[in-house]
Length: 607
Image 1: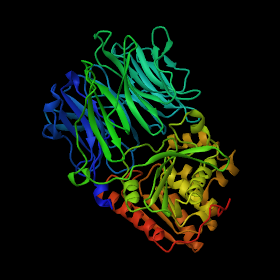
Image 2 (image 1 turned 60 degrees about the vertical axis):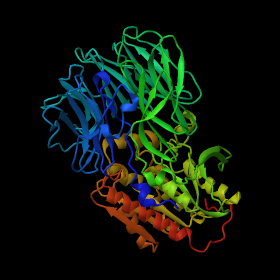
Image 3 (image 1 turned 90 degrees about the vertical axis):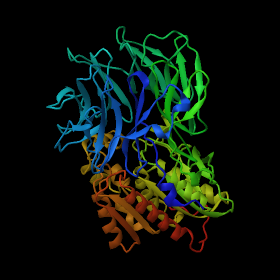
Image 4 (image 1 turned 45 degrees about the horizontal axis):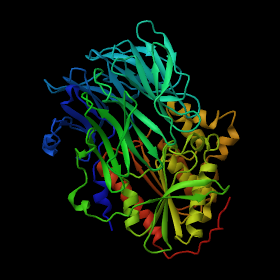
């Protein structure tokens, strides 16, 4: 059996990293010490010279540091700091010469998004702040001072990118439903152009005249190029599967045979990297069967850096030689004692939902069948379980449990129709898909008793399933969940409220929908023991909601195991709290899974 503590202590590299000007260094966030800190690696022209000895830790102290970005001259490094888990980020600049860290947003009481960018001359930074009660785009001097508002669309922005000529900002915002839109603002005239598409992930070409983006209207994400002078769009990809996260070569003077653009291409639960040159030739690169993250290309177009993760490999930095196709591992997070360990590998399956729809999922089979099973519910809901590192699944599978990870309706990765299928029916068809997964395990003789667990929206769906299908489960653990749409909405940030309204309607106009989708009002139906794990500073699923649910469950005489980590947010930052929470989650599940097996049948479903 894989040791859970060892698995949870395995560090990972965050997907937001940066290559310095002239390709000399690489900056990235890594929780190697148990805390998220910023590190820097020498990026030697010789792959053989790159190794652990060339890594330097740049930040220290409490809080999580993320998204390092070099100034255009490489003399400074900006990053964001989450000091208490509340996601109220601060924007910090590190000077390599003086070794000083300067907080450009000291004493603020409002929140910043983790995404920002430098101006091409290095004198300013653009960032996203809700200083006025809702998120907008601002510009601030790299020396600090009062930020200047540059774009307020009325829609929550998520990403901002400065054009290389310094004249424009491209800002990606949440729009209607689950769509994103890109706004281009002229910083001199303040003219604003909106791309008339569901578009996100903007990236400027080296000349600044074109903007790459990912777009999804009728099916899959594709990569497009918007020409700022002609205002015309050219399509780079048209494929089945998602083309995402475009990245340009920083240099504009390379020949036609050199790669000019890279992006990720996915199919099901895996993806790979593709490059495109000026003549339209494409090449495919992959470390293995798993998930590649964001891409950065060197200015000579000879190398690409990305992150890669698989069910037996935590997220690390990898580099591709774009001529030979060779992949080189730059960081190695997996400790020696786990490199030869036996990991149960998942398989991609499909099973029928209650209405006959085919639900994709990852399945970890047990050597003994039937066996106790855990249904793992992903959060988002705009996300999906992919073939990547998941310590909890790895541990549960190694215990001999069956693990099912459904990509229920509402998940990304399976086309626009699947992603939108649960809009205005959250807690409905998505919960049906999850319960149908449990029925499938019982019907196929894979499981004899089933627990379920999920985090964030997955925690919400855990509570929904416990109330809508109480006879299916022997236990349910909900991590940073919400149970009452009304209360959670009232206690959340404006950008999160925007998403709620876009995907559930107005709470006053759609009162019945919100009420029926809130498991809080149906807790008397719960039959199985419940565990709830919360963060006291969670801005996304406020602990106030879970506290109210706990009190009501206790009043109803239900079995409740409640854990509140006062100084944590939605994603726990302190390794000791991560270890404690996940150990107690597994202990809770195992306690009920390893009891004498009750008799279950595939027809025992309460609607």
